Every structure is written in C-alpha cells, then in structure tokens.
Image 1 (cartoon, rainbow, N blue to C red):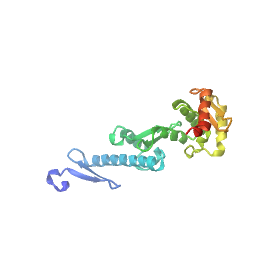
Image 2 (cartoon, one colour):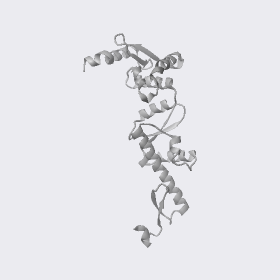
Image 3 (tube, helix red, strand yellow):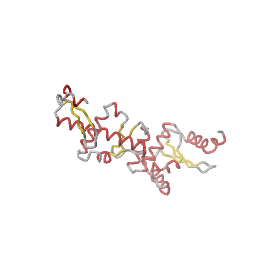
Image 4 (cartoon, helix red, strand yellow):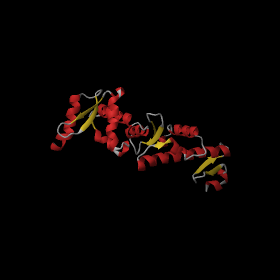
Length: 220
C-alpha cells in the first residue's frame, strides 16, 4: 500500500462522513484544509448524482432546497457557489441550471433531460398555468411552426386539472399581453387548437390543424 511506504509518507487518506475516500499530500496541503477540500469535492459529487438521478429516474428538476439537504451544514449561498464552480468542470458538464419565470433556479442533467424539457418544467414550477400555456403555444408556433391542440395541456407534466383547462384559456384570452394567442375549432372534428399570430397566419394554422385532424389518418 502506498500509505505504508515511507517514500510516500506525506500521502494521506481522508475519509468523509459519507464514506468517500480522497488522497492528499500533506506536504502541499495542511490537514484542516485537506478536509475542507475533500468535503467540497464530496458535495459536488453528491449534488451531481442527485441531479442526474432526478432527471433520469423521476424526470423532474432538482430544486435548490432539495440539493441543500445534501449539505445541511453549509449555508445555501455556499452550496450555490459550489454549483457555480461545477459549471467549469468537465466531469460535471452535464449539470445545467434553468431559471423559472419567478426567478427560482433549478438543475437538470442534459444526459437524461433535454434543455427545452427542463425549460418547460421550470415554467410549470412557477405555478402560473396561463403564462406556461401561452409560452408553449408561442414556442410551437415559432419553432415548428404549428398550432397546438389544447388537449396537449392535459398531459400530467403541466399539472393542470382537466376541469380547469377552459378557465386557463378564458383567462388568457382576456389578457392583453396574450393578444397574439388565438383559438380555432375544426369544423368537422371539433378539435380545438391554439396558435400565436406572431408566428402563424390563420390560414397556415388552419391548414396544419386540418392535416392533423383529417388528412393525416387518411394518408398514412
């Protein structure tokens, strides 16, 4: 063992409370400082693994409060500094931050969750379904471009009870800041779609809606 060889007497093993082991040279790092550094490295590892597990297994964002629980002896500001440091390290390159509309910061691993999906979950976390729905409709109209079937917002990820969906759209359509969000109903199927007039004309939105509602199944 290296620690039993007199030539390496300065190499010491530091075992953290969680059982992780680090090696340091006491020639270059004082014992107290070595313990502090090892604890920080341990916290980085634990934070990353928690974020990765949340993204991979539960498909949820990791909240700052949830991550803070992994290092209860540290102040939230200290944990935030560690998370910021991790952004500069290649081994934690997959750990990304996303800020919700209300300013709260969440984290995800882009190995297991796309950046856009994380943005959507961040919007949902702000608990403003009107703003979330409007942002999604605008994204769909701008990026793809296509209108959005309102049934899409009944997906569990949006956390909008089915009975509340009409009220969400009614509120949205009454607010001037969402004046570009328009609804259209397919005359044959009754399907209801939303689109943003910033990015789609009524004709283009209707043609796409008609293709989805009628022509898609007829032309597989």
